[in-house]
Amino acid sequence: MNRKELLLHGWECAYDKEDWYPPLKEALSGISAAEASWRPVGEAANTIWENVSHLLYYKERLLHRLLGTEFPGSAETNDDTFTPSGGPADEDAWQATLLKMESVHRHIHEQLSLLTDEELNQMATYTPIYQNVMSLVLHDAFHTGQIVQVRKLQGSWPTRRSFE
Image (cartoon, rainbow, N blue to C red):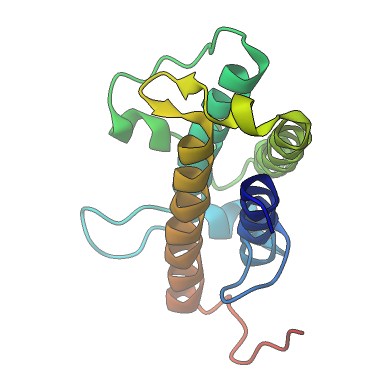
């Protein structure tokens, strides 16, 4: 497996391919806007929707870098990236967020599959593209774990999971 294949494999596992941890798509499956907006006890605790908004922000930034277009994001701090686009009663906004996540993730996969090894070495601001992608794979895994933990706390995660 070459570097690009390894990156693509990681990218797939981060979103919709079961591996050593549940993929993000599975972690978000069946969640309502109300469940996505539920906040665990603790000042630093994030909701599922806040985590998804945060992940989406950085995925969109990567996509714009890959496309060579200007990223319209305006977050001044990392905390600013956790702002959801709706609230507990806004099911349409939650579903739109999930669709956008899937679309952006797939679009990045398409762009990555077109890159040569030389292009993977090109700088994406401060780091090479390949490193930026790998960091986002790890970032997705980290926040997917947080999402699963929130679901366990709220009782919306299955007590047993079956996967192959």
